[in-house]
Image (cartoon, rainbow, N blue to C red; front, side, top):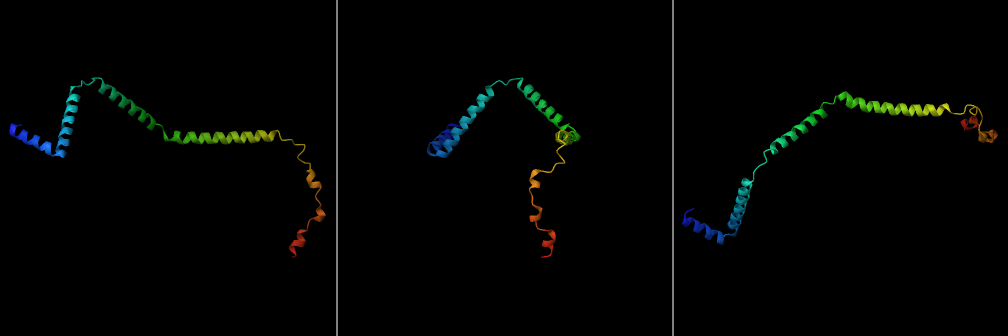
Length: 126
């Protein structure tokens, strides 16, 4: 900048706080950019990043390739297996049921007084 304009800018920055803050921010930003330009990039970084992206894309494609019938068939087969296991358990439990006691009348029924019960006919006539 020419000397006269530079002096005017410096005088303005001394009197205007808002412009002084903007100027300091610009100086810091320039320093950061200069330091960033000085850093040597890793030549293998791009290769590693691209390989990782390709690997993620392949995993995503594999997940999408699962046929729909497998998504439906697997839960269906699990449900059928559980139902078959429950049915087999019930049938196994019924095999060992004692048959000789199935025709006996429970003792509680022998104490029941049939004469004390009201007849259905009596209730129907009311």
